Length: 392
Image (cartoon, rainbow, N blue to C red; front, top):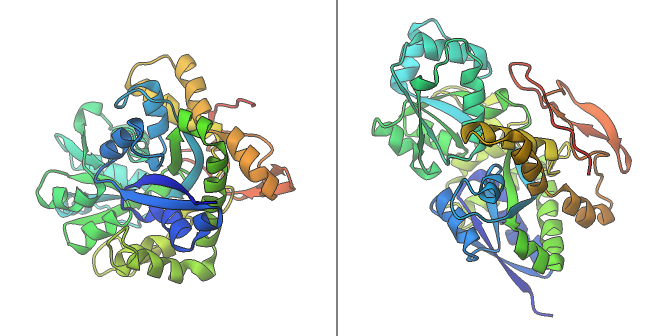
């Protein structure tokens, strides 16, 4: 039988690794799939290509399927998140000018204290903070808003959120267009290496288990390609498992650096893969626990409670009724398909598809289909918890 070709859009980021590895190590080929990876210049271009049917599936920011389904981002299109591709992996950086002002307030970065960093930012008394994010409907924006809004000095009028494609973030800082940014690796490291910015926080310091990228597809494509969907999910799941094995990380960096997909050197890719991030040029890298996860602690499971949290943020931005938005958001994260396609392989699955987000401050055993599994910490830095429990 001829391989089934699947066209998959992606934006060049380290967290596209599960798709690159699925292709390069032939995990997709083993499933009878010719995985055609098509680089996109921006998230808006990827969104529109998927909506128009030029892409079958895509590497997507976790809020994108929900925003497209709700019709608040581009052409209204029902898009489902089949599985989570990565957890965390973002950094927050500031221009060197803002870093200098923050330091003048007495702030000393330890790259892990959101409250102290926010206090220093507002102590600089900015008229307007120009903050770059890769897309309006992104976890980057949600983390930034949660972080800044928790500070008593926060005023929404002080913040101007600007969309900048990830590969252009460093140049936007260099051009004086941005004071601050949140972006996925390697683009924070690129800004650091080009000496235009300093990094002040990893995204994981704001929410320890933020779903960053998902494997998304149009709802009608999934319905019409059930066997291909199943095979693709098996291949990508295998790639995520391979990526999180410590022994494979050096080879993962080598494969990503030599592949035609990212066009980045290994020294730009390795920090995220290894979890060793440098905050200022010339500083010794800091190890960040769970900086970027592809598989461990049930990272791939599309929790409906995570979808609900994302939906609650979108409802707030657009003054929509949460009672209508949250069910739609939860339906976009297809924990039912994940269970149906990966359960028969013996993959351990959590006993429930929703949990209280932010309640776990340490690794915690929970019931699972194989008896018991370990979930990682998912706390927000300010102790916030969100209970959107909904059983399937």
